[in-house]
Image 1 (cartoon, helix red, strand yellow):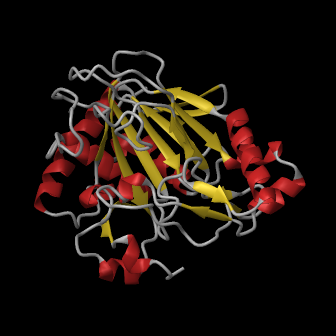
Image 2 (tube, one colour):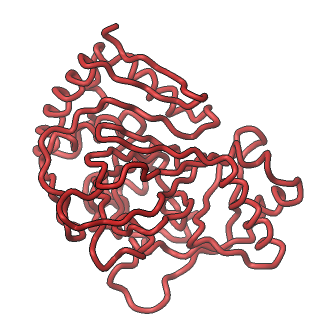
Length: 334
């Protein structure tokens, strides 16, 4: 077949691109990357051609958020020639690289590629790799185990989707990206625990990726609920490192949720050319620990965020194309 073949191994949502599709996506990515160099205002989802119809259809289905899995794995994405894995934080080693086009086309099909003004200088593409001296940071420069979290738990405009494209597997095979769906986890909660998680009895600290270079304790959100939505179509906001209960009963419910997510966890070992897409309101994700060597061949992923309904008022406050306003400028809006 010349089209993508959708598989479900152990009921896992996986799309395998065949060679012709991989090449078509790569050619499209080169075009998209060139357009991005000219302007960030293009909607690059329109570049997906009939040759990639099954991929576009799968992305459209995933965008609807009806799946209980909360993730989609696309295999066979070409990544081209790569330099060594960066050693420092924020090096922007792949400016103009065709994978910028790949990620933008996918992000724009799911919504709109976005960055955050107060995270990584508003970068739209985040290089996920270990940085020496930051092994224990709970962000993409660390290498210790990174527990379950939804991205930017503190933010009024959390990303709807994120994507992780594997460029290099690193020295250790079996490093897992761990994904757990709240829609699967609720079956492991008691009615009382689930009810508490639906009440505004939790606060979340700002993640360290938003507070680099600042002194003192990170700010926290107002009290918020963790689980929301109708039974069977639940959503959540949760960060195992940054979300804290405000009372004993909430603490017990939070512990039950952590155990439930662990019970339903799916471990995805990303190989080069694997693109893992996550619905940030349905599934939390994390990473198993690994030992970097800092020799240019360590594990390297690229991440993007996508938002499918940026409000008009927020767009008018953006200082840069596709970059959401600083958190302090919009706190209290919701």
